[in-house]
Image (cartoon, rainbow, N blue to C red):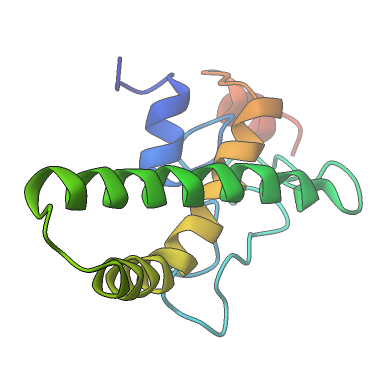
Length: 132
């Protein structure tokens, strides 16, 4: 379920969806100067990460879904474990958690989006090397 060759592996490790070895991002999501910046091509297999101009605009929908899931999880947790917490406290904590998770969700939404369009190919690196 989580081994190499699955989309979940590529998403969790934030590696190339095709070869699952090359780094997808230039830097850590919390390096705010380069947050969400992807390599132009996979450093291992050469896959071009951006299929067309504006390719990652669709990742906004994924990011929205992640944000809604975080909000619902926090809200349900508050109401289950701290039913007497004030609404103001809930909003403050949910806002802070959302702000802290923002850069990670931005990167996560891009790698999830890419995995919708690129599939694993165990021979991708070998094929890339044979073309050089």
